[in-house]
Image 1 (spheres, rainbow over the protein chains, first blue to last red):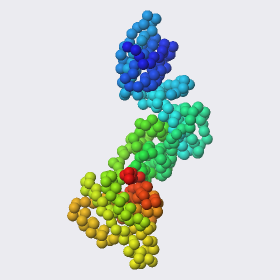
Image 2 (cartoon, each protein chain N blue to C red):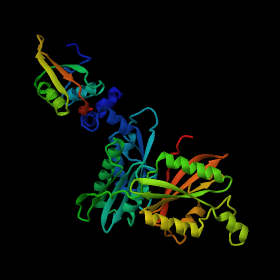
Image 3 (cartoon, rainbow over the protein chains, first blue to last red):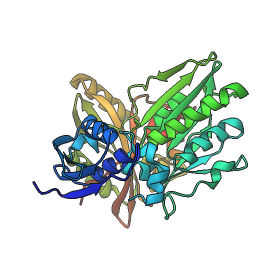
Image 4 (cartoon, helix red, strand yellow):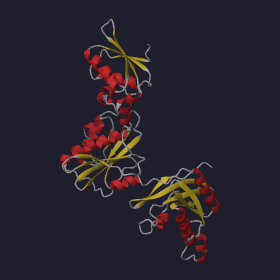
Length: 80
Length: 330
């Protein structure tokens, strides 16, 4: 699946990990897909969960060879 | 879009479900005119300014919060006024007052019903502000302003703090100040009748039963009165209207038989004067009380022989309130 936008939050710490993700989702139209590159336990736990809390859909969460994770989120209307 | 320094500064607010990037921009798009003084204004200003909203404090020297950089480069487009009762914000903002020892806050939208606003703020005195309660009041004030700026607030919403500091939300009354709903065809018929009376004032009565409204064209009896007795009726029918008492009584009888009620009295201003004039007010409420409670007034102003403005006038807590009546396209 080709995402509509990509962000890399591997250099961010909480709470900026989700601030970046939230803003990137808000800038997309409903139905668009955002790819998030993340690293470390905290964002791995919190970013997908916070996105789900706002009503967005977690499409995939896949480990990468370089130790980062690739998270695919679909932007849904209620989260705006 | 927020800039990088703004994202850093307002990160914790952007995280909130009801704020986000757009909400943060909305908080920066209003300027608050805080006309209260003292600790309450300082506390409200501190919360608002650090939240990214511009605050203007004519009554208090600006504190350190005034140094927060503006969130938008352009000047805020909307103003929210914070005023002490018995004043009302013009048009949107918050009224702060007191009622039997409780402190009361009413947040008002620009398009909130002014009649309901009068109803809920009737009897409110200026806020009594014991120093200890000022910070609580100021923070609630900031909260109400932010809800309004974010578009989360109802047209009218109220909070009260009891003398012992308990917080409660106040009920908003069911609105009884909406102008009657008149079908376009009836308005068009009214405009034709009033046009035919030009250059004199024309008048008509709107009768209603449930949702049905119909027009009863009336004669402007002022011409006859003026011709007969210009001392008692100095104004001609060009600047005044009178319903003929006999025709009025007949109309009321007819309405009564048909189960109808008088919804509104309409008249025209051929000279273009828009709105319910001082003379109209005297006619409709001679002793400061409405002659016909529950009856709306509709004024159609003409310019160069064409209708150009129409306004409803409805009685609400001691005065007539005017609202625009959209005219049918001609």
